[in-house]
Length: 329
Image 1 (cartoon, rainbow, N blue to C red):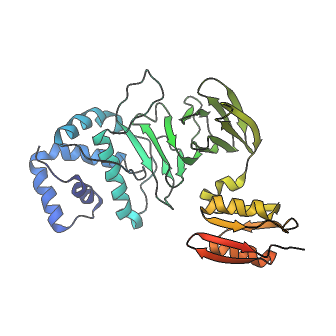
Image 2 (cartoon, one colour):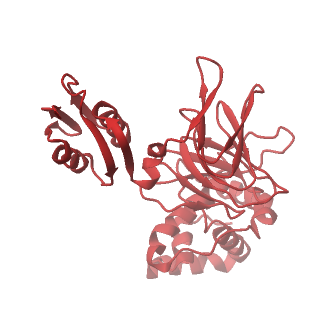
Image 3 (cartoon, rainbow, N blue to C red):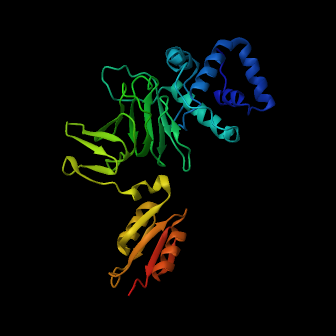
């Protein structure tokens, strides 16, 4: 098989190729029609998946070997309908990334030691990215910087590995539990909505029931409105707590407070927006805040807070704010 830039093939399949690129693919197809059909099938199978990073394309021999292995597995995946045409240019880049990752075969999953480690898909998301739809119909919203990996036979064995934070809306299937693994925990569900922070080892449940297991055996069951943490110092699960809705700010864009001290509010803003906020708590004991903050930038939110509580907020530099005059008497 003659070499060809498979990004051009992806553009061709998406209808975004230039006239010269269309000619190049048509010429290549004359002697490589079988390979073109297989690439088209993989392209279709990858259409519901989100962006993939850290991918390099192996040469033609690797393509032939990998496609031969994956052809049967990926021919009929369960996936959602194709995304709207208006975002097609963006999605063809996502699709080709997914296809190239399958070709390269660089990602891996560890769940069941008895299951062969076939090629796997690694899914990541850029800021504002729409939820990824997994082959079983489950939806995953990844926080920026997060990633998950799952095998190409995911619809049969619903297991994945998570890095970072993600919100899951799991398609119900009592015959096939949905399993997530992080460095510290295993999470098992049937059908529910919940989030997992793999870095902080936190699991929170919005609806349904989730079983959380330590890798060395400890187990707890969470219900809607509950969360649990794995304490690395304690080397075990820490007690169940009420779900903290502000932990989902990265997904909802909303922070809610009910008669909370100003210091606690500012700490939440620091963590939510990733900014530095200097604040002298002296004399602020009576400053408490009740309300909802929903804005895209920290400076606007701080201005709203300043107006409500009579504060003075100055910007000392990019991403650096100083809160003054915190006397709410």
